[in-house]
Image 1: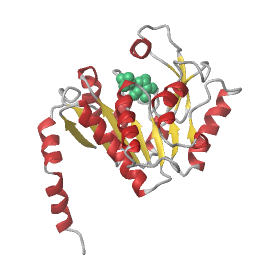
Image 2 (image 1 turned 120 degrees about the horizontal axis):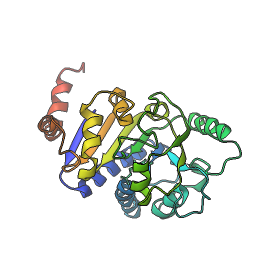
Image 3 (image 1 turned 90 degrees about the vertical axis):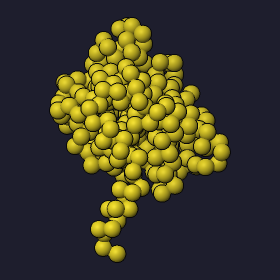
Length: 263
Ligand code: GLP
């Protein structure tokens, strides 16, 4: 895991957005795995501003969202369909046909979940997956106790997640979500967390054991994960100084490694 600790939220969003932009410059038809939540709003704002400045073109990009509440109309303001449209899609030149979000009203949920997995494969897999993290360590809607190998399926949300997302435990209780196994297939993963409310789940994810009690800890097994944090979200990390040293000396570290590469 590469742990990047920055001072402000703004720097965090800019760093995450520049990783996405880099992928699109390298591969104009990149497949982006997208997340929702308050944290992602900052990343989307940054991507929109890069697009408006003419620095990134989404016309060939494909997007695949992590999850969606089950039973909501796609037009419901609480749905992730609405969230994505309002906060990202309508502000950039992504083609509607190139976007994918689980159907919140499927005829048959198992068929929908299998079709979702197939759709990811048909697009050649996810190049870069954006993730936030829940206070209980969830990624997507993989709540604690989720299988670390699961694929797309329906999950029951915890009271804590409902309170975080809706202010009370009264919101939609079920969601279709990519599984941890699905997420782990992405070529690169960027997890973004800001604020002291995330400090505990971040420390468990990065420095705790790999356990279904903190689903995000499975990311320790992924070869290319960047965890981008502000100083508040990083405050409980024990090896914070080490991560900060590596990041600060990144160029020197890379140059040093190059010395030992065959020309
Ligand atoms: C939701 C989403 C997650 C997201 C999490 C954190 O539960 N399903 O993908 O990471 O919220 O959201 P926030 O950034 O609002 O804390």
